[in-house]
Length: 495
Image (cartoon, rainbow, N blue to C red; front, side):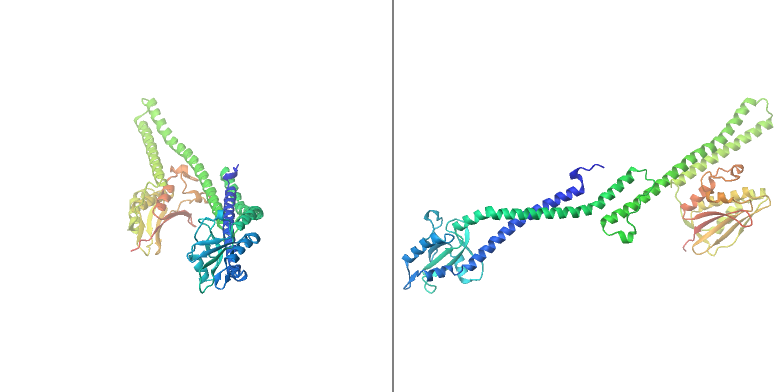
């Protein structure tokens, strides 16, 4: 199958990984830059926390308890030349800027907030503490501060901005060149390596999905006659993750589909055979009836009354046979479609067997066949549909009478246990040929001698379906002495 690049799972995973890495990289760059600035500010303030006090002491800014204005101006001039990265301001006790070392045109504030100054003087270990930058209306920077002329009698503060405007310009230039280039290269290399590693992992993960997809497509494109080969091995060992579990479930599903397709083909073959047999079995009595009626119409004046009556009797017999066949076909179709539903109820199986035996007594007597009921089950009540069970017994006993020789005996044997009750219908006929035993419950299967008996081959198929519907069963076998034995079984009723 042709796969478009962005429509494959691998491509989407790769795109998602790329976007994720880009997001992480950009976030890392911002966070690392912010963290680096905070660290540098803390380090700078910690290293220079005594700078303001040292300037006062080293430059003799305090003379006889008063601030030396000349020394202060000299200090401003000196540091504007040798260390332009710091800016020095003289504040009064209210924070007003009295003097400074910076360019007057760049000063934007007239006053500096005293809260950061007091916070830093109160706790020299907490960094960074940011104070107002006089060169901006909103910017804040790290600073060093000391009361002047002394802490005991302060008249103002020497306020030193540690990262002045010159420092910001130099830092911006450095960051815009080497730092940005190095960071970009580091970020790019990290993203490429992470992307390659992620793609390799995704390839390993999606390879099995691609193989499974190919197997599914191959199975879908086939006639689904054969299940795909099992690649998972032992399910208990090979099911390591969801992909293996999916492959195992596909193999099980494919095997089930292949089995069902084979069953459908068998059903289709059986349907074709059934249609052919139905056509044959319907055509034979219909042609017979039609032939006798046409013959009566052509030879009516030349036939005697007895001949006409005999032909009419034959036509009527064939029409009855045709009617029974049609009824059995409809009954079998209703059973196969589950249109007939059983009504299970407890009933005394022995009483039903005696009643059915009495009903078939005249037919057995006319053929000089004995019909006996033998045995007594330990549990009397069976659970099943009374009418369906009677219908099955009628069929089995009727067949036994047809295939029993004159002077023979048919035995209806009752047996059972606490789980179920049985009725065995045994005759003394020629039995069922062994090759025919597995097929006696198939529709239209008559086996050897079936055509001569005049049976359609639907009775046993109907009997088997009636027993299955009500939760019972029927089985066929041969008696060792001779004859056939059909055993039907029903579950015992719970009293």
